[in-house]
Length: 243
Length: 215
Length: 55
Image (tube, rainbow over the protein chains, first blue to last red):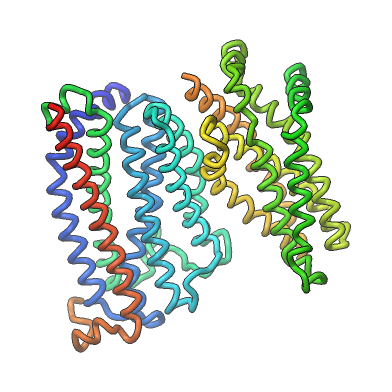
């Protein structure tokens, strides 16, 4: 049943038409939420008692860091879908997500480093969370270079899927690194099970910035996958009608 | 046993493949004291970091041509058609590589450690760590080489090296725990746990990856 | 909850010396997002143009 569902709704043609339909709504709603949350967070929240105004980087760092891991998990799900059910769209999504994931990880690393200067007194520390995030960034670059080194797309997709699945082992390590190792990095302020450890006046814009950034990254993945479909399906007759 | 013997004979013939990584390991460990110059009495401080990285690099070199010759002369395809359990063959090949390269390197690690630290207990504890870590690294680089089968081992190392870094972190922590006399066995168990998963999963994945190359 | 956290616009830029870090991170995030959006839009336009020419 799952197979039938996936094959029915995950054809590149249907997907492309749905992307074109929903993309503007997601983009503009996310842009409004993100802009509003950033203005709220950067200019209207009170300054932190300990960190002063540097805490405002949280509204830029946390969404990027959250997305860098989530995108890898999404790639792992797409890889399983591709290897088990041979869904072409899943393969397109894997390589569409990889550069976007690399960008968000890069942003998470840079914003974390700059945040570290006023708060920790150092821009880099070889601790578990930062090092494992750097490993994730290298993983993304490795995935992109592996895919680019093969001219046969089908072979590249299969190899990439296997590597993504194996590399997913890094995600729980990053997630739990702040609990497993003694580190300068603070523990998570927001969890699904516990009450948030930050004040509501700082918490709401943070949630807003995460949702807004998430929406914008979804849009990036959508246009990146659209780009992949146009490259890979260019010989198909429906693409000519579409263009 | 027959496969194991066959794999052993094949590797024994390729002297460069098994002797090369051992010699490279030896050279790295010999080069370390030469680079510290005035800090000869403080060699111990950086010794273990150099040791783990030397094992990592040696294992990377060891797997460089693990499949490529068989792939180029078409025997990999034949093996896959003939042999019903290709993953078993892959795991046997890894075992032989470990026995002929990983085990001697672990033995050398013990002697280098003894020579540098002059502590018998510490060096004896390094030996099992070197045995386990060399097997883990070997598996990871076999995976990398399978992925970049005909594209050079550099790409394979690039894509799998990040996976080896958490192991390096655990190894670093193990040494600290041995030196402080705490939790050492728990780290060995953690590494053994990782190894038991890796040694089952990697041959299966490698066989699928090679199939994808041959399709 | 919505009161301006600073006394003046200059203070909001300076942020007691932390402004430089906050605004650098802000500009990096925004420029990365913008660069990706623009580059994908351009790539799609190029492919569409190519496909149109070949039709």
